[in-house]
Structure formats: structure tokens, C-alpha cells
Length: 403
Image 1 (tube, rainbow, N blue to C red):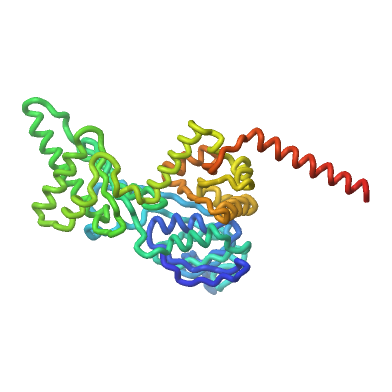
Image 2 (tube, rainbow, N blue to C red):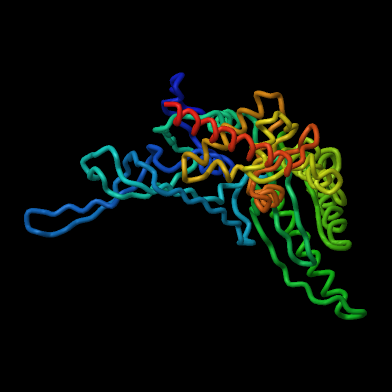
């Protein structure tokens, strides 16, 4: 993502202009743009003209429109075709996601009336200007900063194989995208005549995997930490060996070097420990282990986590990015204040992507959880809260009676 322009006052009011470049940038925009925001982006509008004779002529006009957002839709579609494309070897594949922003036009021009309904199809490498009526909060600003880090991209490439099938995936900090799939018919292996047919089919499959790999996995990207080959049984080893052999035959030293340094055939190893989604998984596992061994130090649910935050007991806050996409501004503000209060007390905050499995598991636990630095009994805390509320109510009644 490129930061084209930024003007934000101390009060948080202002606007930001961003230029998305890939799938993850679209995901960031999806998380940044909220209902009632003002969004300006290029659009294509069908315009009808009526001539003096009464005939109607329609044509498409490209223009910039500003909408007050009423709906944001994001979808990720995996590439299904097994036909080789013309993407450069080892380069990042084109975007496979779509982001649609719907709302009413707030700035009139000669082609579109004020208040007309329109849907913007956000395109890569085209500027998007976002203005927040309620102001920019710390979560939104930190996401902008994170999305514009130079060199950010896919951290792990994966080839998930079966006998005759393969899916090519890219795992970044926030997304898991299936960029391509292939399927080659492979006859069942038999003892005599069927064996040669099976081997020929597997050879075609290995070549198809090689050709798809160099087009859909950016193996020469410095941000790519590992390339994972996964499958049931022996297929992953055979695919990896065939890739190495073919790279050697074609004298592709860059691919061979990447496979030697980044290739992972069995288990996730040291290369993956520094990736964001791996850290999320490790922290979530730590929470579940704590929940099983010392439940007074593992709390989840908005009410309970907020109670723990009020007592300064949180050591690590686990929160899903889905909570910050709440349509109700009060709900979003509640979670923003929770994150800020926890950070101010020196605790660690981990924002999970709901597009990764760990984020989806956290969403099943209401989307927010905490590992506490010291044990707290929920029943005791709730009793204290109830007693404090009753005391406050008693004082209020006494003050009203005295008045």
C-alpha cells in the first residue's frame, strides 16, 4: 500500500489517500472503511443523453465520485484455472479479491446527481481517499502505518498436493489466499501395464506443478520466509524432488536456491516462527493451555476481559480484527478504548486476522480473550462489581433525599 496523502488534525479529523497494490491492501481497506465514512475513488458510470430528436444514447464515463458509505463488501476468490498465464516467473500474482463500497453521492457533478446511489469497485493502483466523520482512532492509524511498511508481502508460500491435484497458496500477515489450482487425471497404479500409464500421468502432473509454481509463488521475493510442501503420504517429497531436478535441468539457479533455503517438506520450522500468523497461533495455544491448567488466568468475553483490564491484570490481550468492523460506532469505540487502556498499562496486544484459522478460532470465543498476569476469580470480581454498583446507587438515593 502506498500512502499518497495524509492530513489528520490533533482531534483525529481529517482524510487519508491510499493506493492499494495487492490482495492484502484490499483487506486493509476493508478494515479501514466504516459505515458513514466519506470515500472518494474512480468510478465508471453509465450516462444517457437525449438528443433534440428524442433518441437516447448511452455511454460509459470514468469519473471520481465521493460516497457516504452505507455498505462495504469484501470477497476473496481463488484462481481455479489450470491454464498457464503470462505472469513473470517468481513474481507476485495479480489480485484475486474484490472490494465494493456502496453509498450515496455527496458531491454533485455534471453526470451524477447529489444523493444518487452508487457502488465503487475498488481497483488496484488507483487512489482511494477516506475521510472519517467521527475522526481517526488509534487502531485505524496503526493499520495504515502497518499496511504501508515497505517490502511487506506474502510471508509463506504453500503447495498442498494430492496425487494429481495441487493448490498454490500465499500466506501473508493477514490473509490466506489460494492463488491457483491444478488437476491432472492420474490412473490408478497397477502391477504391469497400468504402471507406465500411471508414471506418465504423474510426470505430466509434476511438470504442471513446476509451471504453475514459477507463475503463482513469488519465490524470489525477499519477504517470503518459507515455501511449504504439504500432502498426505509421499507426494510432497516426490513433488519437491521433481521441482529440484527440473530447476537443475533448466539451469534455474534462483529457483533451486530458493527451494534449498526456504523449502519445508514436513514440519513448520524456524523460518515460520517469525511470521505474524504463526505468532498468533502460538499465543492462542498458550491461552488454551492456560485455560486448561489455570482458568483464573485465562478470561474471555467482552464483559470479563474489560473487568480484568480495569484491574490491570491483563498480560496479553487477544482480540479479533472483526470487532473493529462493527457497524455500531459505540461498539468499535469500546474495543478501541480497551486496546488503548491495556497498552497504556504495558500489556501486549495481539490483533488477530479473521482470515487466518487462529482468528476464526478466537471469533468462536467472542473475539476477545486475555492471559492475565495474576489469577482472578470471576465470581469474586463480579460480586465486587455488584457491591460497588449497589453502593453507588445507595449514595445517589441518599443525595437525592438530602436535596
